[in-house]
Length: 157
Image (cartoon, rainbow, N blue to C red; front, top):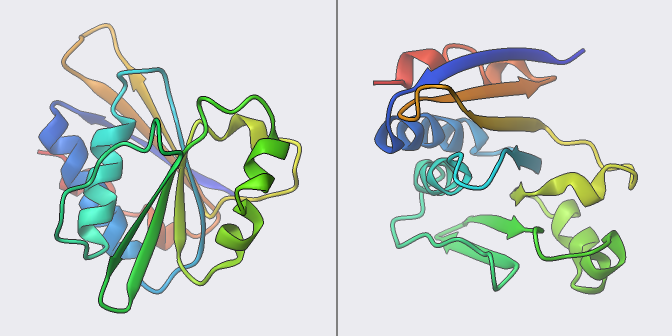
């Protein structure tokens, strides 16, 4: 059974902080993390926080044009994918997605909608939405593992 919670973020820094805590909680986990929401809703900000919290100390960039960024630090690895420019799942499978999805580490996926009919189940879904107040973002987190999302509202500043 999926559990969900929603929180409001008042800034990119607060969104980053939530991402950092998610990244810490993903240590030792494997599986897909879906990031959904409109362009400009904060997917990149939360992704940067996740990769940072996972332990990667370097610069994190959006994989919009590269499709996949791989971040390795010591024995930790995390992938960050952006599927916005792909037209179907076949293109994704051609670049080795199934191997990435089966690897023993998390895979962050922006624009995961082309996977909807492919049988993959994420360990965490993060939906970011703009609100009427342009400075606020609503972050909705859903997971079968309550430990991944419990208490995350405490990290919003």
